[in-house]
Length: 266
Image 1 (tube, one colour):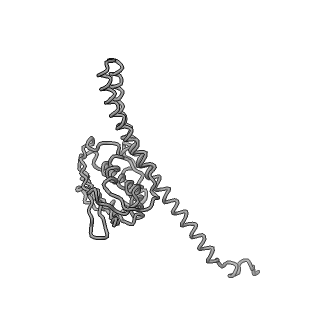
Image 2: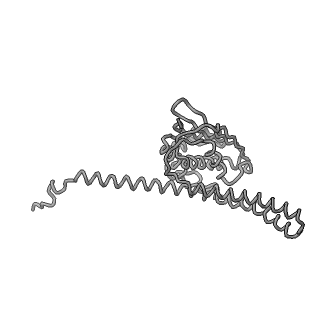
Image 3: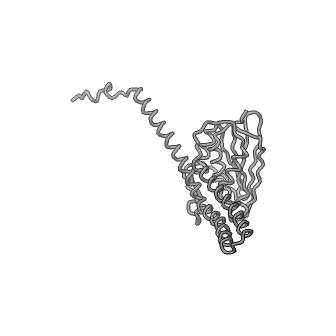
């Protein structure tokens, strides 16, 4: 028996409805991408929580010692010296916490604007919550104070933090060198590179490195060495949202170089 409900006319799809549904899906995907970016930022900070706790303990130990010394000796000169030293360590701890909280709360949805790159690099390094030399890693920053790019500042700082964190994890057991450099490349590009002297990346890994949830560090034995496999995936997205691109070069045994190609400020 013929059923009018199954006629070609009844099964036809209104193009307008398809367009509405597509727009809805695109909005949801965009929201999901932002949520993933937020998750990755918090995960990266969580990875560094063990290091942060260790560094804060290193600051609190002398603070308590100076306070105890001042309480026991009672003389004004000793108390004044103890208070001065306690203030120095306390300010260092407060500044460290401020940098970490700033990284967690920075708005990555701000508009791209001309931004000096060196302060972003320095902030990202400070957000590591640890002097890299304590891990046997030297760091050299060659970024001119006047060099700027048109970027989302919070996003690029997050990318730099991710790359520096990865470099530390690659070199932590072998000592090494971290180089952060930037140059103007012609009229239409600024190159910002993060290069480490770690073990490098195997060719089969290099082809997958920007894929979501791909990681070689999920089973590391220390929390500050683990990763979710979202850092480079999100970093690539954030750089592209600023109108740039993120690339990688590596030779096994000879370190890795991640390069942000960014639009210039002028």
